[in-house]
Amino acid sequence: MTAALTADQVAAFGRDGFLGPVDVLSAAEVAATRAAVADVIARLPEVGEQLFEVEQAYTDRPGEVVCHFLGGWRVHPALRALVFHPRIVALAAELLGAPTVRFWHDQVFAKPPRHPGVVPWHQDYSYWTRTAPACHLTINVMLDDADEQNGCVQFIAGSHRWGLLPKLPFDAPLEAVRAHLPADAAWRPIAVPVRAGQATIHHSHTLHGSDRNRSDRWRRAAVLNYMGGHVRVADGSEPLLRGAPALPKGAVVEGACFPLVWPPAVAAAR
Image (cartoon, rainbow, N blue to C red; front, top):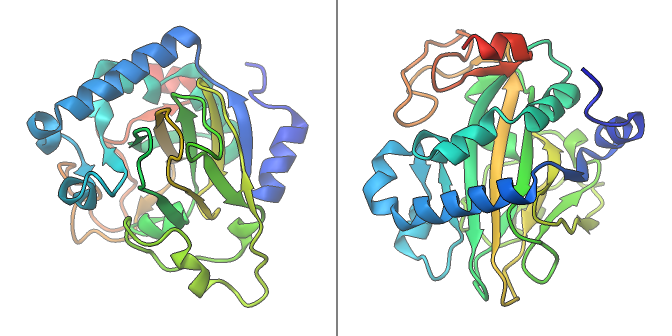
């Protein structure tokens, strides 16, 4: 199979901790995924218990907090298809550099027009320390054109080398993490405009966030998180995700909730 990325793109990811935009979905796939997201959001009261998580702050204050949920792939076939999308898993495999790749979980972020909700600056792994070692990445697939007006994702280049910062609440102020940065950290946000069907990809320790939607357009994203097939449970005191079977500390993270997606021959036999 040919490489998913050029050598320059792989080098940029290693240097900066993020990459994008990268072409991922066709127009038809974008339309199908967008419809799936709308369907799940409309049915959140009905399917909420089947999801891994619905952001409580959004449930309490939907007019203030961004719509965010985990586990859409468990309730809609179009979102499930994204998990195993050949282009997406090839990107994950190339950048993780692991012989096998496993799905960790998905997320949906939805900002309606003129919505004030932000996604505070954070590192994904700060929420994932119940798994180790850190061999994870995130592919953020945009379902609408995204720019600074409607809250595209912004990154801090090189922040994946700053070490792990504190985990902050989802409804924290946009720049709350700045109080916890290393003394010599340079705060230079880089906004990455992305067209619908394109993605950004980032390292699990890269600081990223997104501002409110100031436009009259939607800003929706389907997010896929992957990990090396060797990642194990670091904290077995409770299930890794709500509704997933409990796994003991030290066990490989595996099972129906965490399917292998790479290499293709192994994934096909799942």
